[in-house]
Amino acid sequence: MALLPQLDNSSTEPIYRQLHAYIRQEILSGRLAPGERIPPTRELAGQLGLNRATVASAYELLEQEGLIRGHVGRGSFVAGPGFRWDERFMAAPASDPPIPSADGVINFTSARPAEELFPMDEFRASCTEVIEGGEAVKILQLGSPLGYAPLRRYLLAGASPESDVLVSSGCQQAFDLLQRLFTQPGDTVLVEDPIYPGLRNVFARAGVRTVGVPVGPDGLDTEALPRLITRERSRLLVVTPNFQNPTGATMPLAARQNLLKNAHESGLIVVENDIYGDLRYAGEPLPTLAQLDGSGLTLQIKSFSKLAFPGLRVGWVVGPRAVIARLAEIKQWTDLHSDQLSQAVLLRFAESGRLDRHRQRMVEAGAERLKAVLEACERHLPAGTRFTRPQGGMNLWVRLPEPLDASELLPRAQAAGASYLPGRYFAVTRPEPGALRLSFAGLTPAAIESGLARLGRMFKDELEVARSAPSAGLEPAIV
Ligand SMILES: Cc1ncc(COP(=O)(O)O)c(C=O)c1O
Image 1: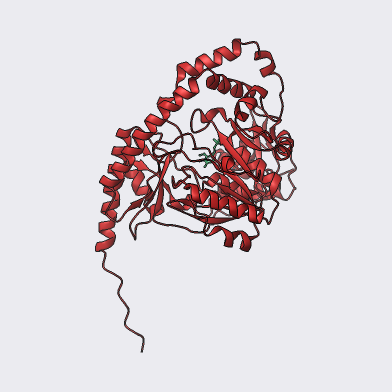
Image 2: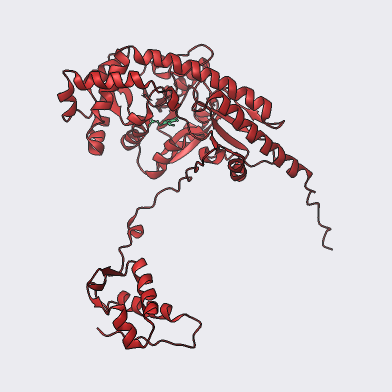
């Protein structure tokens, strides 16, 4: 088809743009069909009395938009309007963007173990023993959606005889499977407020409402629970009694008992997330909800991610047989089963005694890091700052004095050389602009000290500026 654009030399629009707009319109209207050849730049330039570079610029824009494709030696062809993938995507809940990390910035942003504490020799030995062992061929074959049987037996030791276990790809997949089993769009689930965003997002994606139960110094506020259960007609509660993320709070025994009493009275299913339970640095261990509950209403999820290797993606759910059987069905639809080599290596790591030795080192390192972060908060953060005092886990929750806003100050913090996650990442129903999470377990005591010195200086400067700014004052009344 001949190209006959009306080009206007007197227009402020450059000629190459006019030519681009003309050919674009010809393609989008279908007058130039997909696959049709368009004249080479030299030929079209000759026909239209234009410079060849002008035509080449128009073609370049068309190519960038995916409307034409050039084939070396064969000229350019109409590619047809690009497929609009974005129009085909289902609406997804907006999630907060990840915090970019830059060289030299001390990151308090991620609740993960320190790489320098990974026991690499012991890990390599466990891998070798599995690969050279008699089970290797079976491990490489397709397995059960419930998980690798020897690991399942290990995980079930000490659980009630009515319980069963399903191995998942971390706690994160366990959340997803539980959501699919127990909820449908429009349902309401009770979660802690503030909460680990990965949990909130699983329910949001499925159209399930999350309602926040406030978290105080003693973890989830069980006094607020009965009213919320009745008002929200919730069927499910997810709770982290040990070293909650993001606050680091731990529920005392009486609160755990109170929670179970409320759940039994109302038929609420309780999912206990005990992902941080092995990382206690101070105080006496407390019985888990699963241990306290005689009724079988509690499902417990755990994983190796915080204690050992998050990259292996091995977690699990322990609960009544009927529940685990249904979860296995759902798991099968999702990914057939979790990776068996990771499961077998972790089992070997555990049965050889290496996991216990590693736990010991993790607890010692965690205790030092917790002490460092608490002392550094005390030393560097401005007067009026409040922060939690966890007995374990990886996180603590800081509330800056008013009017500081942790979200607004994040770019300043990064420029000063330290980063954190602002409170809004964790909010369910109660935003706290002054709050932020410090994840301390992945940093050495020296990095913790230096990172908090940087943050403290910046917060103090900002506070001074905010407090010395003249107040807006009242405008005279309009009379
Ligand atoms: C409270 C909580 N639950 C679940 C997860 C996800 O853990 P996993 O790596 O086992 O999927 C995390 C990770 O940070 C977490 O903090």
